[in-house]
Length: 447
Figure 1 (tube, rainbow, N blue to C red):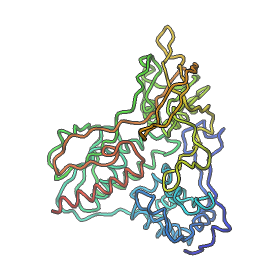
Figure 2: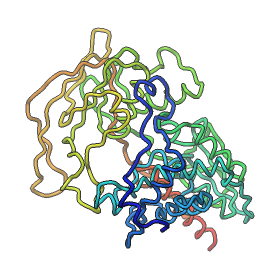
Figure 3: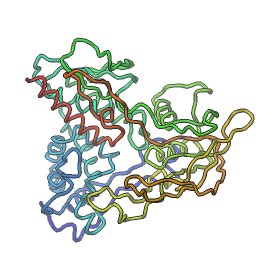
Figure 4: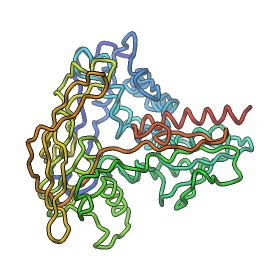
């Protein structure tokens, strides 16, 4: 490393977010960037530790110390080449990854201030596009064809890798553009969709074919291909079958998020179709990232009040003795959307939805929850404490995760990747799965 002691004198510095009173009026990306000098100084904090746990923690096996060192020395092109060797889309993960590497960083465990790997990664990717380090490759074709079903991060990674290996790749997707949940789930204020378009343009120039608005039944795959990659994600969201669920104004989270992204892309919806929070009291049920995305979207649509409830206990701040390394630290996470204004509550179960005479939701009855240890081990036992209350809400969003899809038995030349195989997970894991699946396809077709 160029300066293995920089971590002793240079503190962690994050780029931070745009001011709240500025960012809530548009859907532009909220995260800012550091100048070149500060960014290179942050890269210098990577301390040449004896065992770099970041390698192990990253599903992609990103070589953070190597590209941090190149970045510190100002060799942005080498930094990108090292990054590209393990990550097909660093411009995506550099924006939306929870940075498993940072929670594994030795500095995180010793000082609480990990190296800013995620921001460094994004900076390297952006510099690569600006300076022309992202070049168009023209692989030599091997005469075989592969179909990829689903253009989410797993499908895109599989397609990208198979294309580089010489296969003629066609990607089919039910939507009007590629990206999957990158495009139709993650808000623009976290990931500008031009970032996706830019990468798809590179892939198309390199020979990958995209066929949109084409739903594919995985039990009747298109003919004419030597192998198939099924990367259809987890399309079924977890619903809440509480009394009153049929009331108007109760939506699955993606009904809001995907529609808003389509509106920003220019699509129009009728008044009856439109899911909008303007002037409304919003309740989000579910405490994860999808719920947070609903909060940020609600603010930008003009909500007057936002509340988020979670059935699990409130995580501790900073450190959780119940999730020691190498477990993922379950600690309180405050997102940019939470900072914009939100009442957050924990240990609440939804009993029923309450409507008005016109069939619109107007409130939700909740009840306190007590979690008790399970004598047989495993998940704790949930009990209600009898303390009921009513939360006013003009619109409700259910953000409780997704159900793992059940796949049929496929022939040997069909491979399943990403969330379609594992259930809902992280974008970085989907990319890693797509890469691994591409290797499996290549190995199979070379037999």
